Length: 493
Image (tube, rainbow, N blue to C red; front, side, top):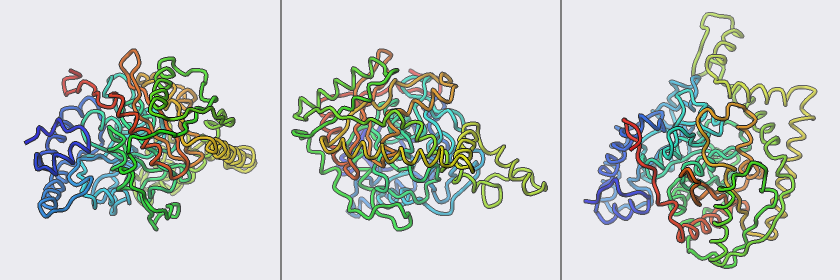
């Protein structure tokens, strides 16, 4: 049998399973053992679903014996703890949902299950997906597998760290302002935020409904393409789900990018951009040029307003979405026996963390009488300008390339000022505001050995183009094949 611990990608595992070199049970046991060894130091998972995983692995092996095949049949995966999972605690990393067990599956959860994927755990995250570092979790911060004193990025930090640490072969997260791409960059994996509407948000606990989008993590562009092919598609239960045909994402990975026009926006050369990050991303763009891509200059003039716009639109929607957590219908209830309004206050005060409270207050203020036009309405108008910037840019290019983040992973506790933390999203939030797909692919390491990510933004529903370019780039580089030294219960080795 193959040593399953050496199967590092979905593609490798699929090949070994098809050849009978290993079984889903063996593969799952190997990843559960890796989880047991690494979780005490990384804290990537809130819930480990060991018994369920082995039952699903046994079922996958039986399906394979019957001749069934699937890109994810028997593959161990992790879900961000924002996806409803029937019978499994789903907390959104918040005390207010600390004991919540949904009676139904999110659409993405269901699609993975039908494809035969094996769920080994629910990933840690920033509470209600509000954060860029994964330090806002009620269950404690996740640590970056490359350096345990560094953040993995947020809010889907646990999903990215789990892939980087070998706890699973792929994972799902959500991206509202960079919450897939930032962790992918910091943890040295591939992460994709699809077009808004490409994947159903049904059963995903809402943060900002016009910005949230479901997406996959993997070590390679091919693994991400396999995952996307499973979770993408129309869902009538989500009114924002696009009724569009899902292309063959894996089939698009030809390695050929000749003639592909890649735009480099001049506005993304910002103050605070780390020299090593800038150098690595420029070198990555040159590798794509050497494969036949054309590099063109483009302009996105309203980029400088993107962060402010995002933190008005996002917080306004959050204040509305989170009003449902009142201690009445489900979740935490505090102050039983008190008058109703006092019970509301006590429940929300005890249940929400500091950052969530901050964003609720910001959003409520932006929507309040006398301030709606000055803040929320103006932000929506600027959002339209940002969307129009991208439309004009894509008249002269097929992809836009930039750094994913201005720096590599920062130290835990280093950015205690909310504004400096919010500015972390400077390269990622424009794609969310415009509803466009964005991908981060590993493109190097800094002098401290920390991963760097290249961001590729595509026109709406052109995820295949971004995946095609990322795959071509990975054929000429090996950054994605490197792994952090595995931390164990005794510390890093």
